[in-house]
Length: 245
Image 1 (cartoon, rainbow, N blue to C red):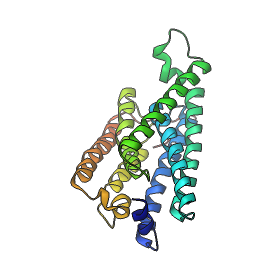
Image 2: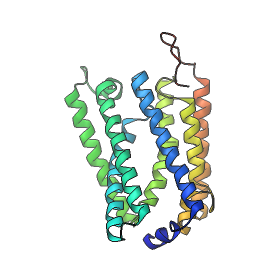
Image 3: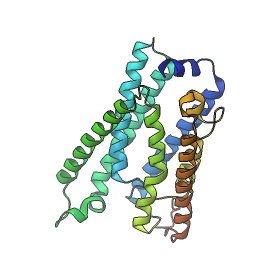
């Protein structure tokens, strides 16, 4: 798949545009996360997503760096490594905020007294260690030498997992209809056919029935999350400031 990917990303303007759109959607999803956790002291994603993405993106940054190094610093591998390193910084911030402002909500039910910073840090370290083993074990099982298979799974997780947290809260706090719409668009974009989707255009491996079937199912989940948020009460504005819609 390495050579196939290099061929696909050589003088292919269409794939370049498609990939830029895909990466931009991912960054927008995290911009929403920053805004929500800073303004509302409540993140839209569960802590398990943050620790998983940290392990995944760190692994991906290293994998793409090694691929770039062994393939004359092919531009896509080098750019992907840098992009994932930036995403790692995003995750470090999200994890920091989870420990600083969300630890009671996240882990409070596990303790008889208020959760300390030390207790939260230990739980995060444990989760990250677990996620690193899962990501790398299954990377070997899947023979995922360029991380594209794992990348597709990360978008599946983004489509499904936040909705469980939002449903548990029964509130729009820490979530956003705008974010839910972006996630839905990103989910559909992941599973588009060749010429429209990054995965299927970059590699014929993904152009198969189960990939599209999965896309239909997880897109339905992402759409359901939009409907769910619309049913919750609107956020109350504090001090006349606009809420994050």
